[in-house]
Image (cartoon, rainbow, N blue to C red; front, side, top):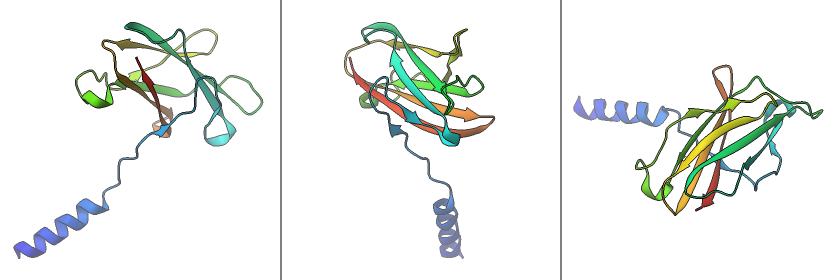
Length: 134
């Protein structure tokens, strides 16, 4: 009976959906494909250094017009110190130009990442990350 319970619980656990790792994004300003023919670019407003820097994301349709109806979240942190400086998911703010903006607080030198999640309604359509050194 106990063996049967253990086997069935391990089968249920293995049937759970795996958490997908974010894909590494290309360099600043490069085109990153989204579903439905859309794409985005990203860049820092200034070279990252200690303090706060702003990450800017621009989303476009195939014809080059701006997309302003997606929800974009960003989570920053240091992979080498998981949990110590992590922000959790923070919403990007949309400015008048249609740029998605996220302030990123950089509190110490080392390797950093910002994980981006794009949502259409409640469905996540893209999950990527920006890795950089400070």
